[in-house]
Length: 369
Length: 198
Image (cartoon, rainbow over all chains, first blue to last red; front, side, top):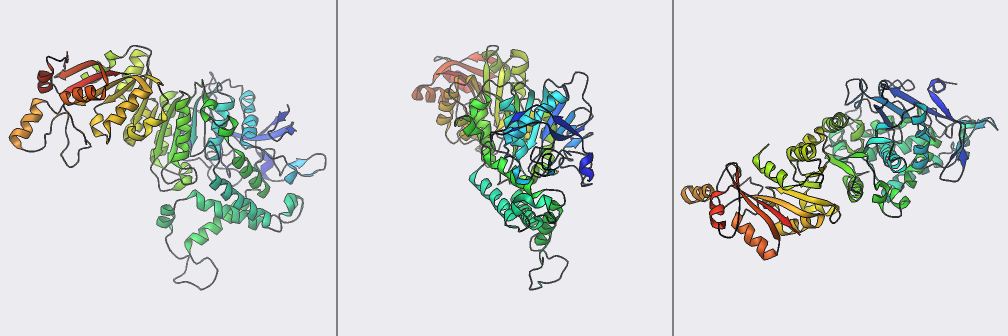
């Protein structure tokens, strides 16, 4: 079909029971690796991607020909130095970069699965990715790390498999998705479903995709990844290639043009149904409820060394929510470090060149290896 | 490592669980971890210092002792250390009560405002004292509640904090403080080191 057929995948044959009650088996998981697994097999780091991410953490993403989403952090001589560490990342199930998801073909009908795909959770994503350890014959990871939804997967991974990693770095995330975040995700989903091309998710077998809906969803979400101050400083009221207002609804302002570009670039690489499924998984994430209202019991007796990072201008997953995790870990007597990084770049800070952030991860990984 | 930290370290038995409040760059934490097999945690307000601790592989939480001690459960440590920070809090009494909540024993050190050089400075120069342990000017000092060794002993009596050991430090020399020598120690010591038990 296209380049996606060329990504690396491994097939999970055994049945995996999902939280929704359905069981899946014989399905592909797309992954990418960076660096080399050493002889002791103790230098592996599993990175979890966020909502719009994929397995292409570093270097150049072969599908989009753009830099990997964590290329400031991961690579040769980068803070997560792939000359030293073996970094693995898989596309989450429900995703659209080669892993089993709504755009996969149902062999029985020979049609794309669409919204017949089961609703998945963060727990399901993690249980699937756990199979990477077997696949690479790794007994224990050196670290699990991720930001945003990637951070939620880190927390879930450690709760599910406490003896399978030495360290854990959840970044800019939460243990329980807030009402505000559910609301923002719902806004994105409604934008997609309001697009006449969505056709209850069956567009994959038809001519047109709900590009407009997905684009609006992305535009709205993108605003939430930035801070008011960051937006003001970068764009202010600057006009887009014009000297004055045009008294029309074209993109007069640079910020409008920027958002439109973000929206239209996103639809080229992302599937609208995947967007529905993955945002749903985030909304369902509630580790506090999973442990009967006591988050610390998720980490009781845990020997993992945690390092939690938040950003001052992140209003989507604010410091207070990250601190809830720190408090729970302290209550469990776990080994935990925490730093709040000063940044004007909002939630997106974890993906950007924020020197203090990059430095803290490098120090943590080097000092504890 | 400075003498104060050596004395603190000697007060703590091996294999204990210790919280260092205001752990700075982690020098004492690292010493306790490496030499006494202490399960150590740190709380530190300065981001620069937090980064230094991380680079040493030490588990440090960025936070303010006046707010963030609350997050630690009751009796979750054997010892809690508070080195030369008490005078910077809005409510020192509340902080000590919180220290004794999270640990059974607290080691608190204070720069002694009763030290003769401090007294002489104010007496002769007529300006706020600046010494090795009190290096700031009046307008930029973080210290809100300066006290002398004698003040702290009286305060502990009044608040019924049980001073299990009271030590005075002067020019690398340590000595016990007791009822009969309190005025003398209060005059000749730069630092007071107190082991408080619940």
